Length: 475
Ligand SMILES: Cc1cc2nc3c(=O)[nH]c(=O)nc-3n(C[C@H](O)[C@H](O)[C@H](O)COP(=O)(O)OP(=O)(O)OC[C@H]3O[C@@H](n4cnc5c(N)ncnc54)[C@H](O)[C@@H]3O)c2cc1C
Image 1 (spheres, rainbow, N blue to C red):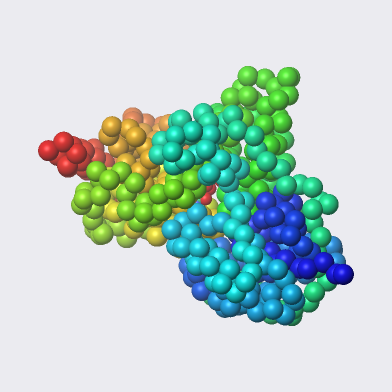
Image 2 (image 1 turned 60 degrees about the horizontal axis):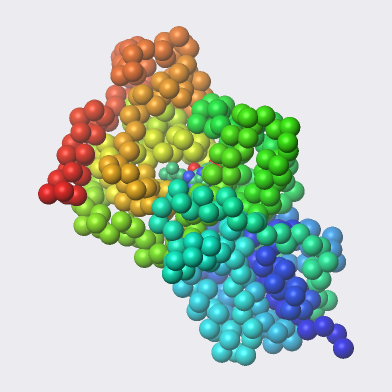
């Protein structure tokens, strides 16, 4: 008798290798690969044109890989519950599996879909695929009450020691011959985006990882914070759409760490890189165990702290015209590429949250319009961290000085000049100045009306914020 099919519903896990969800589906029957473009996904893709282009390119690459294996992706548009039940009826599939979401809305949608399918007599499996270490595993290892971690340092100590599972066994993957009929592959135009021909898909992700490991990983410790050096992996969009699994990356890096000939600098770098990867797992588990923190500060004591929705400098911040070159370069890099250097993100976010005293949610939602990455739980976790209302347990918020940061991490303005055309003519030597200098001040560029004055005086604004913060937390 022919094997009963089992549906696998792809979402932000667009690959075939090392795939916890596919492995779970394959253990139940011949896999019927499906993708459902529902309203929630369409909203996230319409929010950012480059995200839509990346997604469509990754879906096309996945379909091509499936065709090489004698299968194909069944594409449908609409409500997942109705569509998956219909496909199961048409093919005799015993149920469906998909990978878990980690933001509040996604977790609710998963639960609803699971009940709908179970009510229709189907098996519904929600599988942890996105993190290298699933939330329940780190929580169980913690041993307490099975709740998640709220602080990163103890989380990382635990994460570091836990084994990373592998789902690489190709024998697990068998596809069904059932053909329920589908719709055309998604096209970027459908989400209001020009087709940018982005290199997405698992082959592109593997190349990026291997290049990073070969060329830059050993110097990550020294180069990761320097935005002009491209010292980070730039894997975040791939990781967020699952074109490569966090497990694969963690295992490859751990293998390198196991090399007895690895030098000290390389070991430190690899450990720091794993720490970055663990930070993603940390934010996913945070959102999994504390979904209320999607919109409200994780730190209950900060929930009544007043935050502005607007500021006279907000439009300049959005446009990358704050008059602080490091911040403006980062925001323009984001506008032009869909990615911003991680360290610059922290400085730019700090300027919004502290110097402008604007609500972190305003910044998060603004960047959501530009980023290729689609990881709402990670976005929220980072924004809350920077704003001093989330998992960072420092006594006072860490306010970055955007001038000092520029001098330290972009001392000759290489990064700023790359992204800010108005500053390209400023010679390298002119960028070296006192800690509180900025090139526009020392070079009197206002006369040329080329680059704006700072929207706020950092020292005054930061002090005012801290005074308000102190009065709130210890009145
Ligand atoms: C204010 C702010 C907002 C951010 N918003 C997002 C977002 O919307 N989506 C998103 O995916 N990341 C976000 N990040 C985290 C990080 O900056 C990005 O993932 C960045 O693209 C990593 O670049 P990379 O891949 O070169 O990193 P690498 O340094 O090479 O790190 C490797 C991987 O580790 C993970 N990682 C690194 N840093 C972090 C971090 N701070 N938090 C969580 N995971 C991390 C990422 O998956 C990354 O690809 C934000 C950070 C800040 C400070």
